[in-house]
Image (cartoon, rainbow, N blue to C red; front, side, top):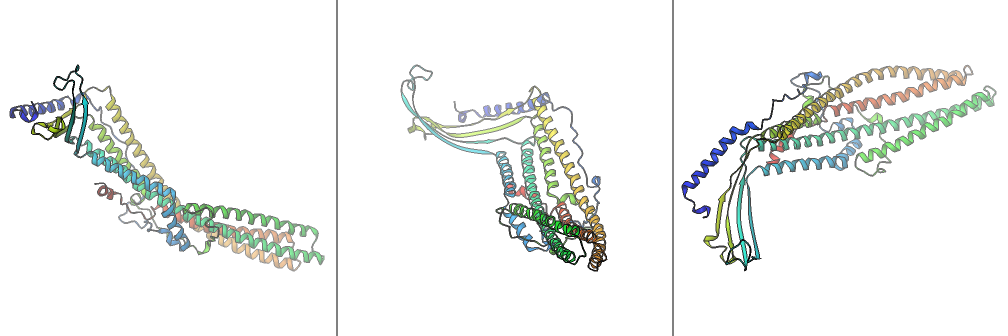
Length: 488
């Protein structure tokens, strides 16, 4: 008897049996208990890390913040890095993979329809289970069948699986933005570092020129009997030291150019002629305070927050495993022994195959699985708390360094003015025969030290402001929620 010829009361009895089985399952589900409730760790708040709870925060970094430094060469390098960096391409590939996985998960949770067709030619044994007249003869078999399968989401497991996949995809998108922000900051800091080395080379070359002038003057004084060989030897020994410093700076400059070229996705020798000027770079503006919305503008914080969401949904998926799983399958098609009868009315077949799976006793496997997901959630929250603390520290450190550097530059300017004045006096006294060359060298070293310090402080001023722009999120706007429509 085929399913199509069943009496209507038989179908009703089957539905009643299915309902009874489902009710019984709901009563027995307590046999596989998830155990006591789990209280996750508490997520850190902006106030807990000392951020101001302000309605509007002036600390947001502008988009393309590096353009505030006022150097078109830097703008070009950052654009090249964001376009061609291999590390950034890896982040984008991970994002595409995470989005694809979320789309796979969404598609798997919906109804599944398949159409199958197959045929075979078989000789049936005369001594097997198949009776005559099939036994001992060869026949062709044909099958054409459409199947529809669906697993209703009675307990929210499918929805939680999709939200967990979307959470991971959104975290990957925020990670890609964080990688781009870090790359732009590294290019800008590398550019400033190169400009510092170029400026230090200029100071070193000026020091060499001064010492050559002093050597010429000393040689004249020795010839006139005003100085001895001691002063002449001191003057000559100062030249190799100055040339050594220049060569060391040249080496560092070459390495800095090569590193900057690789950061921007170019061949290592592509920037051999790049010579940025430190005094041409302008420090970006500094915010007065750090507001609570800092945590919403940093992509790394957003990524950690989405991982908490994904882990939360993972717990929901593991908890749903304790409940019944219902699968509904229906099929309709044609099946015949002999291809000439495949499309006869008598070859039709159809049916419904409901199935229910209920965990009763599993040796603690489901509870251990749930415990693992809960531990994942606690780990994600702990990681988020660490990222929040680092974000507040990073931004606060940059502000503290900027304030300190402003005071250091003020004091250094006064010290440099005094050193330059003392050096002029020492030179005048030496030319007039009233002082020794040792005094000139001593005061000259103080001048050169102040010039080097001025270059370093200027470079640090720019570097810390770049670090602040990166700490403020690099002008990122949270667009991770758009992945929901992209995946659906």
